[in-house]
Amino acid sequence: MHYLGVTYDMKHVPELDPGFIPFGVWADAYRKGAEKPLAIAVERDKGHVSVRRTCIHGTPDMAEADYRYVERYVKFLLWSIGGFRVYICGNDPIAARLAKEYAADGARAFDFDFFHKLYKRDLEVIALPLDKCPEPNEAPVPIGGHMDGCRIGFDAGGSDRKVSAVMDGKCVYSEEVVWHPKTQADPTYHYNEIVEAFRTAASKMPRVDAIGVSSAGTFIGNAPMIASLFIKVPRSRWNEVETIYDRAGAAIGDVPVVVANDGDVTALAGAMSMDVGSIMGIAMGTSEAVGYVDADKNVLGWISELAFAPVDLNEEAMADEWSTDQGVGCKYFSQDAVIKLAPRAGIELDENLTPAEKLKVVQGLMDQDDPRAQKVFADIGKYLGYTVVEYSHFYDIHYLMVLGRVMSGKGGEAILANCQQVLNDEYPELAKAIRVMLPDEKTRRVGQSVAAASLPELRK
Image (cartoon, rainbow, N blue to C red):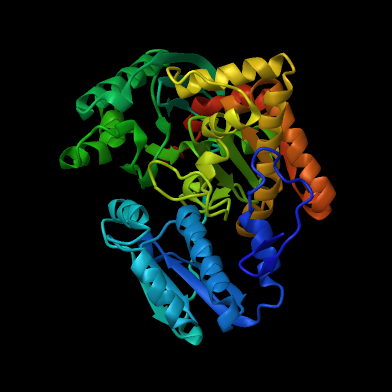
């Protein structure tokens, strides 16, 4: 197979998506024979810097391949690590072209706007000589695992909110309540619902020592900077959103409050249940949610918003409606992937159904061993197998826990089986190094809200 002058191999081409060009597989092939050094540094808040060193070809006939490689590499770094400043060290023309794309009026205007909102400053791309590349300054920090005392754990989902009361590691009360955060423009609604959940859990314990929150979104400290839960809230009232969890905690008492991304809390739940590190959690639901805990059970301080990171280089791949980019993770590891592939398999879906209902239709067919549905879930498994190659270049993964509504039933089993087959047949070293799995029963019992309760360390 060929793309931009690079030949790469795939034994398990997705049957319903034969144009799929996995970025990790292509990048491995591209780097063979590339000898011109290039360094990419990404700077984020508090002076933290991540540095990746690679090589490009640097010849006229490979100019487009060089740019495609670097642009997608930068895109992955931004959406895995986060950042407001990108240094391209060793190639000024590529840096200049990237600066035009990652601008308010460029092809990557969505990325520019997202990181502006996150860090409250413009995203910059800066050219530097190779020997002037900034030094790395990473800052992994421990996450959770604290079970002493009387704790509240809150999980802010898009359609329901869960809260648990946890005493010395034992869940003494848990409830799940339907709410509608994504349709409410007044953040007072969100605040009142969160406080009500906190107070309900508090009433089940003699006191409250700490509050932990698992929430979708991108955070600076406890402040949600961008979060779909508050999608209708105008930016003019965003200061109320940024302080919402701290204010809700203060309504309960003067106790430590820690907020973490729900993907990282998912990985934490797995790490706690199995007592392991180097674990990535991927939740395939409405979108793709990812979290990661390193070998020392630390979080890296990265955003890990891999829903918007590149997976497929096919220039005719389906575009994500929000980010407008093509070939990004949310179209491969979510209910959107099922809905995308189903018509190609000959499954007609009623356009009046919601995305969740369309997923259930295909899952129902899968439960009946419908060969069309089997092709859909088999291809998502192939997507995952080849994408594990890519993710393993950026994260040290020993355990990959895959969950979410797309992984339910026979469909989830088919996804895992096909992912494993790709790794076994083409990447045996990765197959040995990475255990791909569903959450075990203990992880399910720990649950998101109970893992969230473990986030704060008690004051001494």
